[in-house]
Length: 191
Image (cartoon, rainbow, N blue to C red):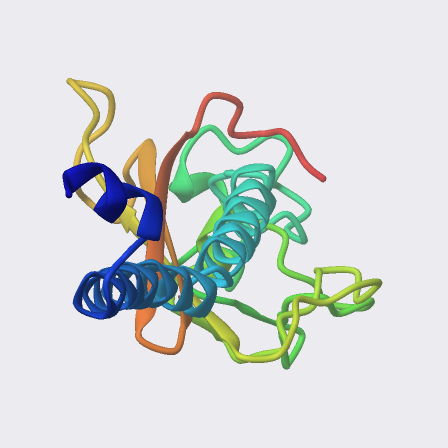
């Protein structure tokens, strides 16, 4: 009798149990695929945020870090802040030169020193400093530049020889923060 049962195939109960097990397993696999598909764009957004933060950090770090604003006639020879012409002392944030405030990307009065970027907030779409390209909409960035002592190099006063640059890029509820440092290694180098 057992040999005849094997030849007959599955009973109705066995078939129903098999279908239920396969259905539950398929539902589990499809749930995982659904979650994966929904969050597959997240790495792209994080990579774009990282690329924006890296570009902004590099833009700030490549600026001059002089005692005087680079527009000062004494900027190339000043050996301290005391050597700057009145009204041209480099300070935190953009300076006003000849009644015009320096702005990022301006053709006439651009940011020309690391300190000019302190407190800068950029709303999306974030354009490059030349305006030749921009990040997709939805991203915003802020830049903080603060004096910070580095292992005995400089101090934490506004005339510090080292600055910490912090770039924060956000999109929706996510944010990325990149930090870097800039030292006053050549205080008379002009752009």
